[in-house]
Image (cartoon, rainbow over the protein chains, first blue to last red):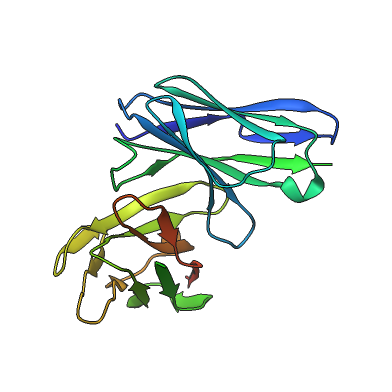
Length: 113
Length: 111
């Protein structure tokens, strides 16, 4: 089973709202990732967690706050977002942070009004 | 730095036509190479991969061969179907580095 699940599938939020995206995998992977994908563009890496610790932050604005409560779960907390943050947010996992193959979830499509 | 260049799309083909999507890469070492596919409204799915020179990755009728001498990893399929319509991303990974994607190629297959 190579499944990564993400909830919600769609999210609409105002600029003053606080919301969270959730990602889950049960493959025993110890590395998890958040990507942002704008329309007609490739995914852009935001964060990498390795063994539940943040190992890479690609200079992402603080209005995005990741959290890894355990090895199977990854959250992305959103606060005071801007309309330009509207995008597809993809979660991925790999066996280890140094492992080559990443498995992606279906994504959460976010619209910020 | 590492980079991936894909042929620009969209690529429009009739059903049962032969598909080639070109991908070339620049890397400092010996990367692993991937093709990911993204169907409309969905996330990325790993289509195939190759980890060393002359390896051939294959899945669902798609194939790609890791060519170190031409730094290429072209995607091919002998007979496309309407259901293959999607965006195809070529990507490379080197140990200790990020997964680097190409810009993506839109494939449209007409019945």
